[in-house]
Length: 446
Ligand SMILES: *[C@@H]1O[C@H](CO)[C@@H](O)[C@H](O)[C@H]1NC(C)=O
Image (tube, rainbow, N blue to C red; front, side, top):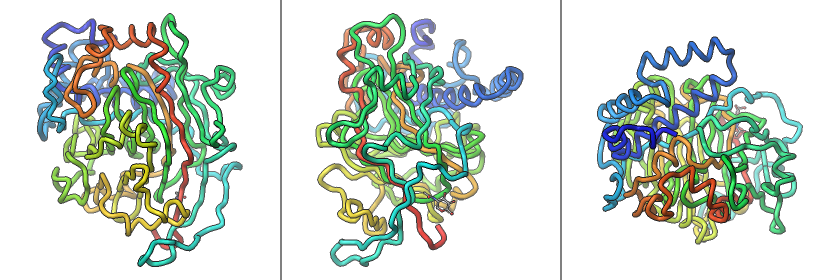
C-alpha cells in the first residue's frame, strides 16, 4: 500500500491533492490492464517507456514527487482537496480531478455482432409536449431485466487498480450471492459482506462484449455503491489506451455525493476553456485541466463535477437514483444526469430527444477534440473496487462534496485496507442496482 509506506513530507503532498491520486490511479489502471495483456517483455517495455515520461505508476516515492510536479504543472486550477484534518471543504476541489477511470478492457473489444444483441423495434413516438414527436434515436442494445447480464464479460483476474478486491466470474458471483436479478427485475452487483476477510473482498467488474463508436448510452440505476473505501464507476473506453479514448460517465470514491465525468485521450484533444458555462455544461467545475491527453496532463484528463448532490453515492441513492445519458456524436461528447423525478418523459418512452434536455452536466466540444479521432470502438464497463489507487489514497482526505470529514475520521480505521478487511457489514450499501443500460443510434450520420 503506498500511503502508509510513504515518507511524511511526500505523504502530505499526496494528501494535498486528491487529484494527484486520481490521476495516478487512472493511469495505473490503464497501464496495468494494458500490460496485463502483453507479453512480459512488452510489459517491461511499457513500464520503461512510462518511467521515461514520469508516468510510471506505483511503488516508489519518486513517483509521488513526479505526480506532484505534474499536478503543479497541470493545475488549472483551483483548489485541491484539503488534506488530512482540514476539511473546510470548499467543494470546488478541482484538484480532485480526474477520475479514476479504470482499466482498459480493449482486449475484449469486438466489432462483431453479439448473439445477445437485442434488436429494438426502432423509433417510437415521442410524448414530449410541444416537442417534435419523433425521436431521431432508435434502440440498438438493451441490457435489462432477467437477461441483463447476457452480453457482458466478467473480469475475474486481479484488479488493475490495486483495489482490495477479488473480482469473480459470473458463476462465482452467482454462487456467492453477489449478482442477481432482484424481484423488481433490476440487476444487482454487490461486494462481499463477510464480517472479516484476511485480505480482499469479492466484487464484480463487467464489460460489454459489443463495442460502439458514437451513439447514445442511457443508464438507469436506482442504487450505486457508496461509503468509505468504495470506488465505483460506469464508464467506457477504447483500444490501445489512451489512443482509443476513455469516457468516465459515473465515478467517484468514498462518501462523495457529486459525480465526476472525465475524458482521457491521446495527444491533441483539449477543452477551449475551463469555464463550464462557456463549454455549455452545468458542471460546477472543470476538475482536471483543459488538456485532455493522458501523457501531457499527468493523466488528469478533462473532468467535470456535477453540481448535484443527488448525482453520486448516498445522495443518488436516497433519491431513488436516476438516469445518466452519454451522447457521442459530431458535436462532441456530453454527459447528462437526471435525478429520479426529473427524468424526461421521452427517455421513459424509449424515444430520447436530447435536444430537449437542456444543458448536459458535462460537455467536451468537438471543435478542440474530434470525437471520431480521439474515441473509437468503446466498450461499457461497470465496476466496484475498494481502496486501491484512488479510494485508498483519498482515505485521509476531505473537502470534496459529501466528504466533509475524511474516511479515516469517520471510520476510526487508519487505513482503507484495514477497514475493508475488518468491517464487512459496512459494505451492505456497496452495490449497484441497475434497471437498464440502453444504446441508441440514429440513421442520420452521427
Ligand atoms: C451507431 O452506428 C454507427 C455506424 O454504424 C456505429 O459505428 C456505432 O457503433 C453505433 N452506435 C451504437 C451505440 O449503436
